[in-house]
Length: 629
Image 1 (spheres, rainbow, N blue to C red):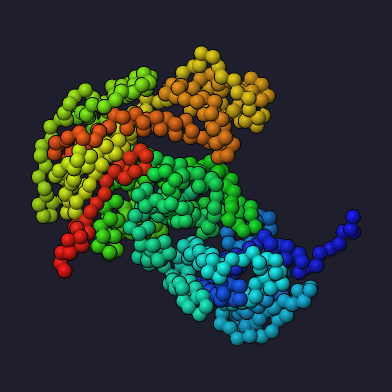
Image 2: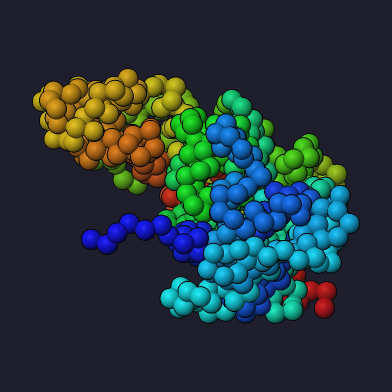
């Protein structure tokens, strides 16, 4: 075996560069973060050939003192932390002191800087095997400029893995987009091959923040977003979440920041996905720009070399806070929120900002919902007045019995034996100046499937089955919560062979499992006995359900599997109990359905994530018929 030898400084830095410097975008990220940590109000980035030939980052921050320049390009040299206590409460984007040394080992790097106290600037470069720093005078305003030329010139194997110039620049552009979203108070300019690609001024006012979001994420995102701002338990979550109707085929419009640092975290992703669970269509992804503010001492950012992952001290608290905030914000969305964005897009203008928004979370086109634990009021006209008879009966008698028990409570829209609806007075269209319901008033029924309604905005088309399905589903969920989840003992306990970790987990989380309707006992080192299951799910695959619950507890510290399966069953029951196609409704019945939609949570989507209604504005109709030309 060869003798142990000490690595040269350059080789050690090149090894470290393998973790920090993956491509030109990695270099841009590290340099821009250093500029922002220095208090820069303006950051200019210049790129040539996708960043392989040149990366130049200039800022107007505090600069680096001439005496500190020799250490600026050394490994493990930083001004951001001094003690272990500083590391446990990092408040800056960078802190390891590895980036500049790693970058300089795989490129030709020069750093020019000047502080306000200095009369002249200085430039530092490293060269040779030992990477000795060479300092020379230079002309430069207050701030710092870092030039990185010929990236990976001395590591050709790494250079072969780079993609085309366009692909590499797209990664750089995405990096700048994330930094610009994280810091509204700083301006950014991005040039590629002497062409200005992005120019963003500092955004302090709500209107300026709106313009930055629309330029980076698209105007459609702003037109279809809900502004949220909630605080609890020392946590604050604010930002923009898109309506479920603005879902994406890919997760390419999801930005989450923790104390200004963009992250990709499994815990956060699970909380967001759970909040959107019953309002997104299959395999669609939500869009959001969210900011979580926490005490730096409660989050560990020293987890991954790229600093894209974090670890929360109380992950369950953070998960619940994010989920409940987003869940309530989406539940509070009403048809007028959808209408505001649709009208703004149709007329090609900026929507009116909502009133009552704070400075930190400006209200652009959508209402800034106040998150609370109180359920929304239900008008109850359509479902409780009597729904059409279902065209088929449920096969499972226990489901029907549970369904009937919910109906006896009077809080559920259900299929009844009555053939008609309680007559409602015929509404009269509002006169000029009078308030009009968001979904207007029904005027006709199309093919026994769609309701046509008229409003000042234009024509509204409603899928009556999908709309009634959501109304029924939400009432059934509320009735289930009021009745509580009941358990049923198994005649013969189910024995499961599991790992020791899963068995210990089931033993320590016994009370939580009991709350879910599951009574599980550990009868051996690797054996569990399931003695009780939720009465509503006694026909489900108990073994798979228990294994999924234990897997969730291992991964996220909690599980919502029972709730998800229960809601799936309620959704099926609601689908069978909702008004069917070819059912002829009277005008009062149609208007009762519209009023219930306006009062029901998540009424914009059915239980399967499909839209329940759409708006065709007057301007769109005018375009179809070439009016005004």
